[in-house]
Length: 116
Length: 115
Image 1 (cartoon, rainbow over the protein chains, first blue to last red):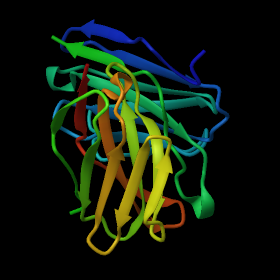
Image 2 (cartoon, rainbow over the protein chains, first blue to last red):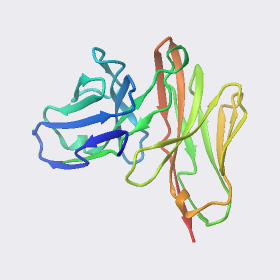
Image 3 (tube, helix red, strand yellow):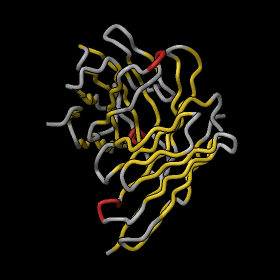
């Protein structure tokens, strides 16, 4: 079984619909992240969390919200999906490195979202 | 503005040949640089990490180099195999204080190995 599991793997929805992408991990890491990947662009950080009570905006958080339900679970919501949110979404985890440094990122398999 | 540029965007080589992928960055202050491999339809997987004091590091047929003075890194793949076909992503970390860190991702090099 994968250490970082994302559901659903693929989703097609319509403009204005609410969508939730879920992520669970068995690596025991405190830090969890949501990234978005678009063709021709590098991975961009949407939100991140360093523990259950910690939520932080990334560089492209507008239109998204997150919930850290437990150490192992981090979900991403699109309250009212729009076509330019069509992308490949990745959840990732990491352990804290030396002096609070981010360790290696462990990515899920990705969730491909299409908004029509 | 922190930037990471990778070249070439795409590369096609014959199985068994060697290749080198480039990563130039303008991230400051520099903390470390990682190379990730992303197979089609999968999430990225870390290949190696380079810190400021390291010039060369190998991981099997993969060898990464870092020149912190010129802000360049390379990933050399020796005796390529079909399974090396993937996108290779350069990620540079900039530390802004304890627990405050920014990762800047390159757009990747798409490598295709043909038999």
